[in-house]
Image (cartoon, rainbow, N blue to C red; front, side, top):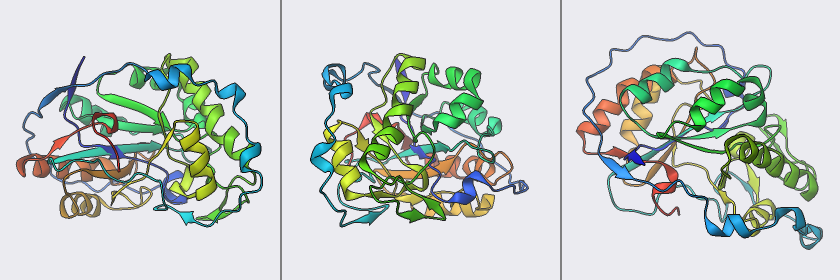
Length: 288
């Protein structure tokens, strides 16, 4: 299946504002976009995921472990593509919930029109609210679907708080936060997600160990692309263009159509293409 070398859009609900913001769009003149490079990308489920029986997963090994790290960039969390090539991964989060279940159709249509791939981290609440649209996105060859949690909680074993949101309070709840949506995505699309980003993008190190044992990759970002969908279009464009580097992962949101994210991307993507960057999905390269 043909895939464009994409700029990986990381759209996770990094800030609570990405699930609550109601900003007016600021119009930005977009530039012409040249065609990205086409690459081949496999869509087959990795063999280790086919053989792993998560129903038999033993949580007892984590019961006596106390976390020693908490944050977005702790040990074991991947934040870049492991390459020196001029590629960027755009990741787009869809957080769900009362104020986070909208759909930025302008943004997605722009990516489709210009054949720009993106990795979409989708929350279970957003899927349930946008079931038809989710299936269309999951079946589109440009987009890689990954897991953004079930209730959009930070992933912890002791109820740590990030951006005013209380995290999961035990290893059992953390496991459910990951695997409930994992199962929903798998049953809906027929393909297992291989990566996870929690609500607010915060983990503790015990939950990272759990994800590694589940053969699920914890992923964050190297470019804060829209600050929880609070940036203006100019701020989005500046963040993407000024922080671009080989292997960068950008975090943005696709659930706030009244934010500046779409217009900022439409300004930044032509500039990045002119600088020689290509856009890729997270699965196109090893992560580090």
